[in-house]
Amino acid sequence: KDKQQEDEERALRTAPKPKPKFDPITGQWVVKSWDGSVAGVKDGENRKFHDLLATTDGSNDNSAMGNDSAN
Image (cartoon, rainbow, N blue to C red; front, side):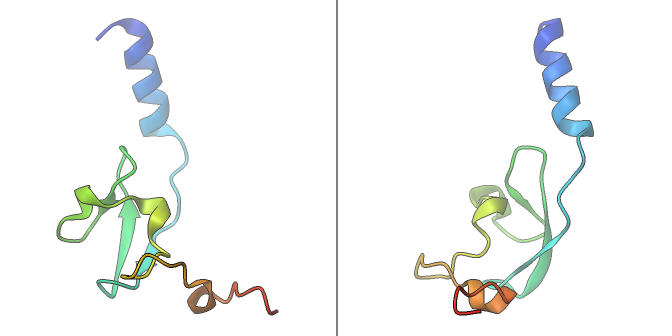
């Protein structure tokens, strides 16, 4: 790696981390890995942390988080 790549990676690793999220599929609290995948559950490396609100059928269920648009 060159110096610029190392600096970019260091910045990503030391940046403020998002708070843990509840994963409705596994029923566990999970955290974001440095590469954007899910840490703390089996096969988390195959899932993206920002997609956790997606249900098993691929739709978004924001009502579980109190974010439904009817409010």
